[in-house]
Length: 263
Image 1 (cartoon, rainbow, N blue to C red):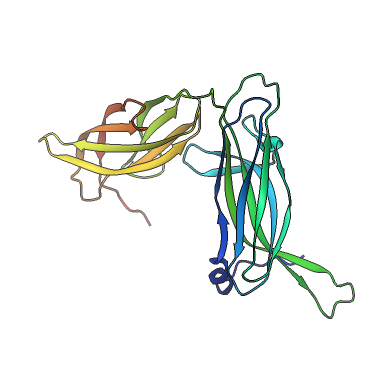
Image 2: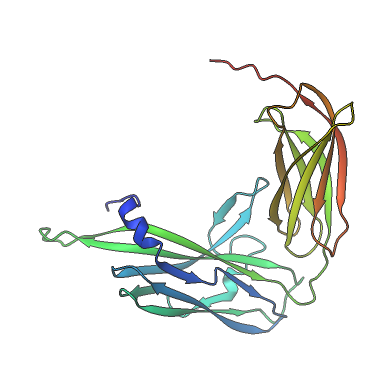
């Protein structure tokens, strides 16, 4: 099987492939079911084929995505999902709909937020004309992830905490604000950090926005400005999760040191 990389000439056409929405948000109780629709359109001048499949996923402590086989992590809802099709072909200018149905089991030990990822991936089939066996090769061209969330209506508790401010082990003059989602639902957060010198001068660092799953610990990295004079500073890290929750904060002493470059 020949494997080809996504080429720039195709990526221009790929921009005309529409997938909407890219998030399916279910709020079902035990035993309930619901179907939601994803709209797909082909605005390119070529026929496009899609394959559709499910994966499990988590966000790691740095915000990256890690993927797993469907229905393999404890928070997965992939096993509750059915798709009305797993292969789609669209001619130029054509559109269609993909129906995603969730059915929550009638009995659950502990209702909790769950999630999965639905991938819509373009494929292209190439058949060698002079090959008697007419073997086909498939190359992946574009993959779009649709986030699928299931939050039972009685699961509403929100909570956040700041656990630490610690030096980043890999980036000189950078510090991690260690945050945790202590609630039951996913939350959108905003972290900020300000530095106060001994003379009272304040330096505010750009805030960073990020989501956190329930129970997740997140390391939010702030790099100290390169023009900051060497010395110690009082750092105030603040975690903001919106109007429903009080701000969480922590203070620590951080140091700005000259970086010696080595060849």
